[in-house]
Image (cartoon, rainbow, N blue to C red):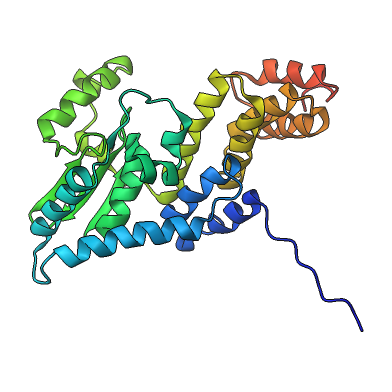
Length: 286
């Protein structure tokens, strides 16, 4: 009698790859939860999603069926920021756990982008249209209401006026010469961020934390996800190659760096990366 077929479960990276394979089927919340599986291999994403659904169900029971969108928004804000107590982690902003949704659910503390992902999921489940906004330096939430758009700061729970948003933009515009004749309109900075872009920003937050700490194994795990998520972002392939080189993985590092050089010929760091490639035995620049 033939032995039963054995199927190995997907790795955390393979699971993430299936979640982000197509934009049309990309579930932001599930993929965001899955990011934590590198650090917490036993994490069950479906259990975390069920916990979020339970929070949404409790909120739904509180909202009258005939509540209009602005009333639903008030119920959501009271529930999320007051009753559940979600808030920004002011004291430990750069703690990696702020980027793990299951940890944010437990502690009720996070950074703007993880708080926003949870808020948007609850908003969607009660019938509101909410999207993330990759505002410079601070992730925001935009809600489409019959009376117009409402912008919420997920770190504080405050709704932001146009004047406040303009004020937040001043340092960014000043540093990039986007003032006077070259001023950019506010609306340009309030475009809704696609789920893939939100995930990339989450991963890049972790990337910066691990790179600053020179934690190469954790950085490599993040870079693997960024390469899967953004296969044509050659700078992520470069950075994965550099992380691999730090870990002595010369053959795979050379492959990444060579791919970067072949696809980013006009990059400012082309010469320095070429030298690094040669230094690990990868030959001269293509």
